[in-house]
Length: 118
Length: 155
Image 1 (spheres, each protein chain N blue to C red):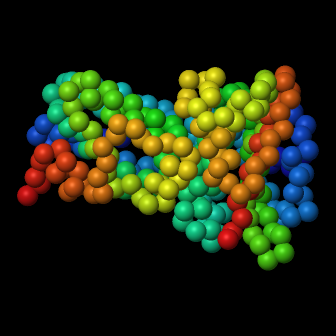
Image 2: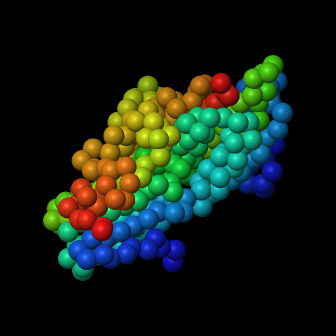
Image 3: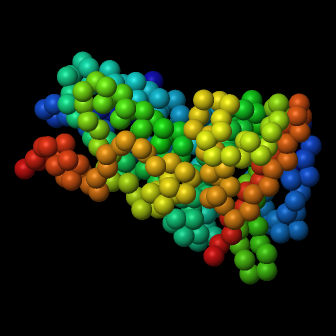
């Protein structure tokens, strides 16, 4: 089955979404991430969406839900790299990704999670 | 019927010929699976780039297409979409018409309200898509089907 890879770095999980996700793939990622938070004892999740040229309500909800699930599993989530056109569209669509922490890039996202990459 | 594939949707709607006068080309695609939605997004993006829509307008149109395609599959039980190239004088645009032969929308005003959903979603599909496009029209009849038309013009 098609899957988006989840990389582990210390107590962080890193995901870079580089494909145009269909709905099942988004749901699989949400499930895989929650599983991995528990099995790896992860404290942070960093989701890089810089390669995504679209975030619709389904993907937006997946991101919000993942962040909420991570929170109750004692992990923080940061979404990084959202393209400006995607941000404009999301807000006009009516989605605000409530409760999701964001950063402009991976480096700033890491800093937000209390990690220094250098 | 203009449908290029062999499982054309039976819902008869005047929305299909609403912009016939402005239409220069039509591509009809089936909407049955998740993969069909991704496929449509790719086609819409290509057309949007071809008429040089701004990046923000491309993203808005593709996002609206994704929302409405999902509605067609989830609420309409699948259907089809017609991707139209439109020209009005010097103005170029893209029209999308989503058609299903599903149960129809019983209360349209309610369905167009932000946050209203019967499917456990966020309730932003219809209302959000309307905001993302320049023109929006809907034809729905209980027990017969639903057609939604959106247009984005190049500014």
